[in-house]
Length: 303
Image (cartoon, rainbow, N blue to C red; front, side, top):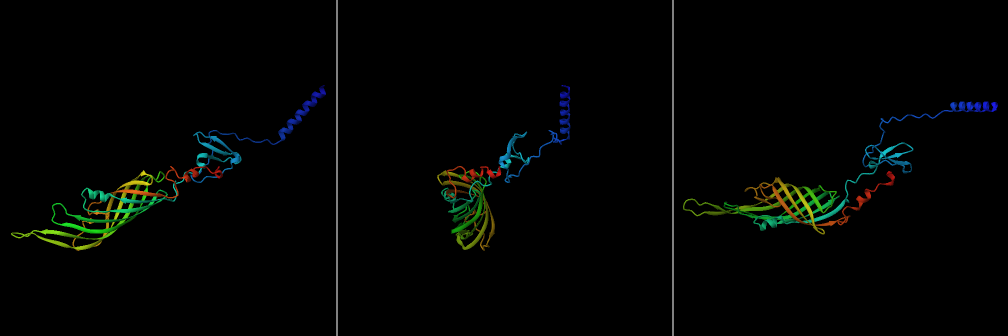
């Protein structure tokens, strides 16, 4: 019995020596005060992760952390997914055709100049919108208290520029537009029925100033609003600030009225338009273009 006890003790001693001789794995203690190196990817540049080795955890701020169990890489999930696209609508969004009725309305209220114009606007991404307008204008003005009548024949004018839609990622049915345009016109005008006092015992004399032609270019800045009425029909309002840029010399004085610009010396103007829009590459009945929905879906390559 004694021999058996000695044998058991000897076996335990041999096993203890063998275990002490085997190299042990070292474990580095974790310092809870040391912050983990969490990779925060740049928006729009997601880094591919192998989904088969990913586990999810929550950090102290409530963000979902994706942890790669093989490499130890940690990524905030909300930043690993691509951002919403900058433009929600397609490149070629729509074509709009408008009729400006401001001058006809004002004519009915007693204005003595202006006819009107038609315009077209092409929409890129529901954001950038080249603009062109072609119109006609004339005038027959007799200033109060003065002894002459200022007349200009019907003459064309052209405006070229662009609009910027501030609400470009919202529905095209409602737009806030900031515009910049250059207008140019060439027209003829004259002053008629100029009454000259005859002096003592003489009757007043009447004379006309010869017709003259002028070419004028001007700059126009506008702020406008467009709202849907029904179907593809909409209405638009705008206020404009105008400034003369260049003008040909006139031997008998400067023109009182400029087609497309309005009366000289009045830089503020306005417009009211009825608009018909032809949609391109999107359905106006859908609230958001279908490309937005697909772009918001996270790609499997990014996770």
